[in-house]
Image (cartoon, rainbow, N blue to C red; front, top):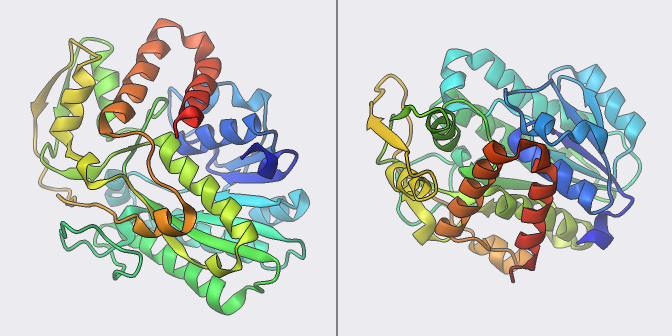
Length: 350
């Protein structure tokens, strides 16, 4: 993939977040000129800070809710590729602050779309939404790209709206000759460097690393767990295909693991415990926050049209994740080298 990104200008929104920091590092590894855009450092610890990514990529602190500022950044940088990841991504926080969630996820996406509308050069744009854009009917077959969108909680609803806005711009507003746009939908991503609150693995690591017991809210909730490198590989693959295949314009793609990788929260924690031997947990249900019990994607379209599928099965994905955190607490200073090593190991897998 390096030949597609070497010396290309790549703009990544949400670059200081979990997925954004991994993608920034990966793009830099491929020789791209990376400009990250975000509203600051979202967590403490921070993967972006621990990897010292500000030393190897350009970074502009800009709130995507501010249309004038984000438009100015994009017009000045003149990117060849845009990966739009910036979002308020925590379901619990969306209940606490629905207004900011809507402004970030929906209006923020519209601001990105408006900002690229006037660009004259060819540009590839991948808008990342979520698996939660689908109206969840607790279906066991896995959601297809043609299934109905809709969400009850503020996070899901705002991401559904962002998805619909992108489809509107792609089909009715953009000039197809120079803006090549696609939508990526992915599920629950795991991997080293995720420090967000109210996510299973980060919550476990925070408590287990100091000998405490973690509380599990929804142990029977099933999710399509997949490693961050598998998901980002999907985004990258989509960007390359969009550049060279006209028939993919405006298309949406699910990036999810095989059904056998869809495990409940309890299974995930049990697998993590194989590395963190002293890991302990208790069940504490929270009935004030409604979360889907079953959610999985059908990724046949991505496999057929993009030749993409997950390289890491459930056990391997958890192993990659647990080993990263173990390395973090043993030798924190070498996390950039170790993370790049994991990327290289991932790329070797056929």
